[in-house]
Every structure is written in C-alpha cells, then in structure tokens.
Length: 155
Image (cartoon, rainbow, N blue to C red):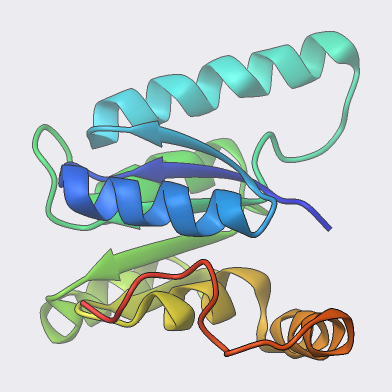
C-alpha cells in the first residue's frame, strides 16, 4: 500500500535520503525545507481534500526534523495536530532526551526516531514492522534479496 508522506527537513542530504528511500518503496513524498513551508503545504492539501469531499488526512504521515529554521519540528507538530488531531507524525532528531517532555505533553500520537539511524530503521518506522516483514518475504519469493536493496548505507 502506497503512502503519501510530507517531509520537513532543512538538511538537503537527509531530505534526499528520505525522498529516495521512500519513493523506492513506492510511496509519494513531498519535501519542504522548513516548518513554515510544511504547515503551508499541509493546509493547502487539506483544503484540496475538503473541496473533493474527502474526509481523510491529506498525508498518511508527516516526517519532521526537530531543529529547523523558522519553526521547530515540535511546534509544527502542535500546529498540525490542532488542525487534525488524527494526523500521524514522526519527529526525527538527534536531541531526543531534551525534547521528550514536549512530546509527552503534545500527544501520544507522535513517533520519534533518533538520528543518526540506518535508512532501514526509517523504513521500518514509516511502514510499520508487520508491513516491512511482509515486503521482505514477498521480495525473497520473487528474487534473491540481500536485505538492503534500494536503501543507503547507515549514516
């Protein structure tokens, strides 16, 4: 099942990693360079969904870097959850310990992935372990699979 994912990441190398890895898995990825641009994109896509009459999240997942210019990831998550409390959000940060209190206060819906991480860990987090294992079995049944095809080396 293909997912529609919105990424807010100011590091071009991480943005490219997310986009390349996730699109190789069949997902549609939109990348924004900071928190403000992410919110604008989210609101625009929400309005499009309303016009079509869809009653669902415009994105299956939002991936937010925490340390970004103009607006931190936790603040972006707060804004988006005020618009849509059912939105799934993944915050990626090297500062997990310092921001955990803010995450706990905000929502139990927020997931966290600590930098640095192997891209395979991101795929598992995004797709969920059950789906990841199913895709592994499916790939093994079709061809010889090395466990890393299409993914970058760990950072």
